[in-house]
Length: 632
Image (tube, rainbow, N blue to C red; front, top):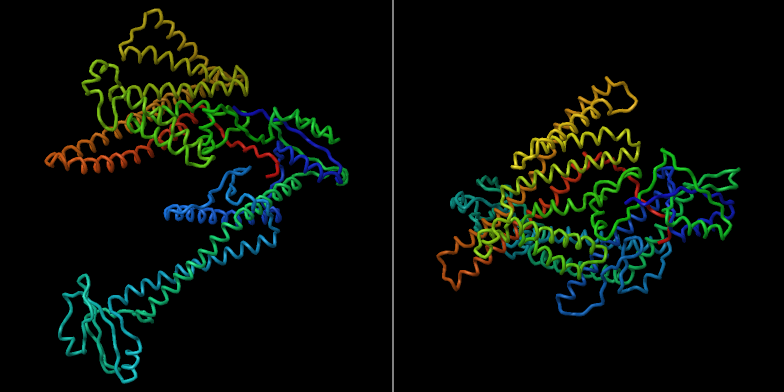
């Protein structure tokens, strides 16, 4: 659900305004009304730039600490943990050096530390570039062998020129040895490498390519590679030392920058009244926090007033859901938050998303693996990732149920197993699954249209929503009359007459009362257009849900193919040896199938929610995230 927001205004004497803002920040519940853009504000933009710069280096130091931790663990040594823990505001601090978090760097000290890290990283990049070039030179020189360039220089001083060539071995002409004084140095991968030693000024025209040689000999290149690797180790060790020693101080600096940025933003959004003697600030507070805020500020003598909310106001959105539906909030945020006049779509689509995922993955064995993996991961992942893992656990449970009921378990058809012969008729076959997908799609689209009608009723009133509700009853009535007989469900004749009557009555409302207050003929014209859109849209939208059947069937069939491959390809092998290649085929095949199926099982339910459901429920979105003014 969307938390109810209240709009408040505060009038404060200018000499007390800093104290007031500090108190407001301590309360941490007010979302400041941003009526003034800050894109052109130089101080705030500079602070944001500094924040991005610090975050970039913090991410690098975190990755460095994590890599060091893994390296120490692989070497069998104990190391105090350096993995970040979540801080207030969503980012992290390292518990290993928790005491260092109290150290606050000044801006000058922070600037010097950042410059040092950037200089070391820049040097790291230069070393990497040099090593790539030197390794390439060494690879070239390894073909020609270990020789000294001094010898070539001596020959040049004596009036001879040494030239390096390469060509396909089949093109090498031994006549070049007499004509150009050629010497074959090496042959590798059907390429012959040779040199010519000729008097200076001799014209060389062999059918071969001249080789651009490095400017250093093999020993010197190897020596420089060793030197660069030593520099690389030194720079890496220095960066690791900075990460262990200053990581949390840098985090504290970032927090300080963010706090100052929020403070400046509050000042920018403040209006000056009465000759700049009185400061006016507007903001939004969740309804359950208003009483505490009013009392806290009233006790200190600050004046506040509750304001009327207008249609022009951009109201921040705060979602509040139970433990289950809260898991799906990242899916809502991935598209857009609802605006304040809408319903929170999260609890409305959550059960459907789970069902769609289960139908797409469609194998009980894969669902079981997902459950086991989620349980194991939940113990190891960071705190902020645990809701995502719990969501995967819910997906795994749904997949286990749907996959088992549809008769697929690791690609095997359990319907054909003799143990299940007595309950064989209770499994959902592939044909039934296709029909079930269409039924689910039809119900989901009608459900979305009902949500849209309810939204119109709440926003504009009942009479404006009558047409939307009428279309729902028309569709349901006609579906009962014409679709139920197709599945061998016979309706009594009086019931059919009642349904026809409902369809005609609701159709009249949809055609002639779709826009209350307008001319009846204009309503009839727009009603005809709405009829065309509704019919064509309904058919297309419902058919989109057949992908649930297609994707689930594809995954189950691929699992069965890998099972058949494992059995058929190893049929002629010794039974004592056969198990190993069978296991390898099954592991690789099912791992590939699970990976592809997981992608499809996430992408296509997202499409059905964001396209079919959001369109039919007339979701508008564009909500502003609730971000209270508080000190991190």
